[in-house]
Image 1 (tube, helix red, strand yellow):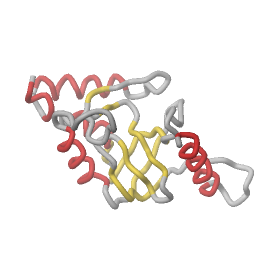
Image 2 (cartoon, rainbow, N blue to C red):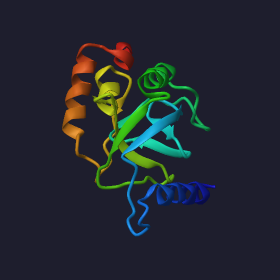
Image 3 (spheres, rainbow, N blue to C red):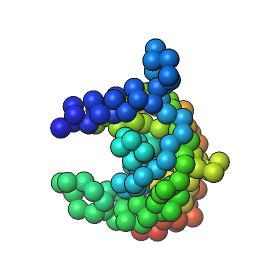
Length: 155
């Protein structure tokens, strides 16, 4: 099933590439058709996009219960991006082991990955080689934790 999803992702990207057919480009803009959870969305064409550098509490994991503040993170993400056109920026690694596109997501000039951390809906989850905004995310997390925002209310 994972291979199928990965191949579907590649097929989508091939269709999205230039009309010349010899240039392979990742989408720079996309319509969000569904919010999976706090850190994953589906864009038009069915491709799943996982936000780089952050992790939100689980709500859809097949082997884990819904985690503390997971529903809130999912809802906040939905308010930010559901049904909206987003800009996608990339780092070194483009896909994860599940075939999801890895991206920094922006909507109306707002950096969604950073906003989720800043408001306490996400924690920093840096996985090299995608470390472009690690310092920014760590600073935002420190401030959210100090101000007991979002999931940090519990601690």
